[in-house]
Image 1 (tube, rainbow, N blue to C red):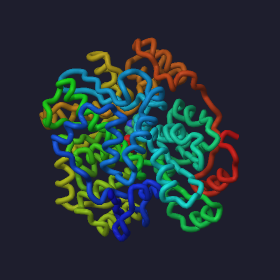
Image 2 (spheres, rainbow, N blue to C red):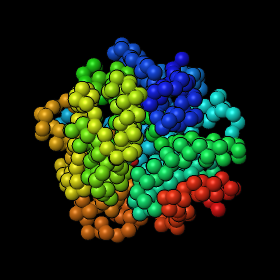
Image 3 (cartoon, helix red, strand yellow):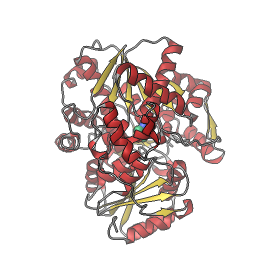
Length: 502
Ligand SMILES: *Cc1c(COP(=O)(O)O)cnc(C)c1O
């Protein structure tokens, strides 16, 4: 059976259901597979022509075999079928723009950002895990969001019986459209709260609640157990591995890549979930040459991969790629665990340094191992905007500001390394989700109008239909607000309330 171990060592392995149900491992660690299954190229060939839902079920079954195959096929069919994903292209179409470069579009789900790729299936994985391993308690999902996870999680968990979900986002740290999307939630069990602070404050607040024994006891007394829908939950990360396989198969079927030849992927990175899923795909046998980690001005990861020093003591920037405005990338811990030779003590040491001094340093061997697969760079808002204009003018392809950071960093990579390997950039959000920034980059005079108007203007200007989920949005009053140190009382008041929309 697939078992999961704790990055901080010192714990009994658990089943995948238990890993998903718990969200986080004891002592602040994360769950990782005890052994990563590996496909041969022959085995991959048998998966090549599967539909997205079929492939998702197969890959998830390889990683989490205590979920029976038929159950996973049922979940994947519900999660990745129409109508949520609209169009004929399926959930993750590949669009080539020539020159050995293309985009893996991950934003066709119900909330127009790539978080849907995982959050459409995760509620099924979690409710199943709760039924299998749970004690009949009500589940309270806590989510910290830099903008996109929040709405995707609210959609995914909306009206799921036995579950309440509370989303915390940084006040003023998300775009107007993101804020409107979240506050427009209409689930009976969905709660949204703005927090005074930035994303890291929200994430630290949620992590602190998970680690607070008193809070755990208090909730236990009320028949409630907490879990997480952030990418620290393995049930969130695993479904993201699927689209890397699917993309490769699409390239092969389009005869863009010779079967077995490696490709590069570029991931606009924040919490390190997306790129880590690519790393797992490579471990599972997918021919990947380099994974390129693209950051915005909050380039703590670029510096880390270049120097081996992770240092969050630096200014925090609010950029026009807000979903990447993060200084503590939680999923890096999983990569570090593998790169350190699975040394739980080392991880405790490093993460202790990060929590205490905001800093840690890895040794030369670990750094070298990371650099063999990962290349990192960052781009400013201006460099991203230049890319949006350039690629639109040259290729008539419209990128959102996050994808544009990926594109800008890919240019640096190609200039510095001369590597001409076929490359896909993860297109993580619909450009219509950030229409003001995109119009500004394209030099359109209406860029300053409010985002609910610029959406339509961008659609007219580019001749592309806006993502349907974004049409009809309007400014919404904030539902709830709290200070950083008020998240626990807020959670208790949410538990007392009967409906998220009251
Ligand atoms: C969440 C998000 C990212 C960052 O992804 P991680 O998995 O957190 O690294 C990038 N772009 C967009 C649009 C996102 O929503």
